[in-house]
Image (cartoon, rainbow, N blue to C red; front, side):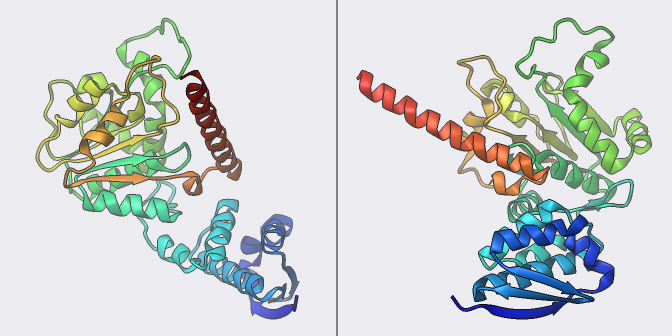
Amino acid sequence: MSVTETTIEIPFTHQQNVFGQFDCYVKKIERALHVTMINRDESVKIAGAKHSVEAAVSVLNTLCELSRRGNAITEQNVDYTLSMAMSERSEEVLEIDKDVICRTIGGKPVKPKTVGQKRYVDTIREKMIVFGIGPAGTGKTYLAMAMAINAFKSGEVNRIILTRPAIEAGEKLGFLPGDLQSKIDPYLRPLYDALYQIMGAESFLHNSEKGLIEVAPLAYMRGRTLDNAYIILDEAQNTTPAQMKMFLTRIGFGSKVIITGDMTQKDLPVGTASGLDTAIRVLKDVEDIGFVYLDNKDVVRHPLVQKIVQAYEVYEKKQKIAEYARKGRTR
């Protein structure tokens, strides 16, 4: 195998960000692409097989451009850029990075980080009702929240309504002390966390007191008609078909609805049908309803989360195959 060498320039001001602490990102790229990289001043020499060197150049140039745009390079950025470079699509990483939805209270830009997340955000912009379906860590709720807050601030809607079914996640919590709000708050905490980070606690409390932002359990939606609102139903896999139908028929004029769920994390009693499963089958051909499916490649939490999701997917697939085989033998 012939060895190809090439040299690229990476400015000092971006090297620490692109290379990572103790050059950990450089080592990751070398292992993934089977190349050798040597840094001298602002020059980086890359040696290896021709296609591997080309991929490494693409990865480093993409990461350097992300750094120039003010991004703090994370391991997720490196992993995703590597996977895109291997399929010769690394330029798409830079296209995705241009789509800034809004900024957090600390000034950090909120934007999609994968092709799947970009598709999800674009579908939300285009459709009146969007189902975002995927495993934990794919940004379903956070991006939906960012889109809702952006629409609220720009005057596209008059209020934001966030809801989720109040179902215990496989645990019996028993009696919870306090008033009604304190009893339901633990179920809604993930929604509060996202609101505080993007909007800020003070702004949220101010708008909440005026009734412009509402965080409530799904049961509170019955009997209401929701006009000019951005409505997010989180953890939709834990709804029953009746609850899902009730929720979808609350929608009024000028409203936008986002429904998020993870089909692998149902907390319903055994034998109970999921409203999300039913809705997907019933509504798949209805115009102006979008379905976006995210997968382990779209996980943007710690890289280990991506590996955990992938391992569970493989395990559950094997379990299904074994179950079909058992059923076949008993017939």
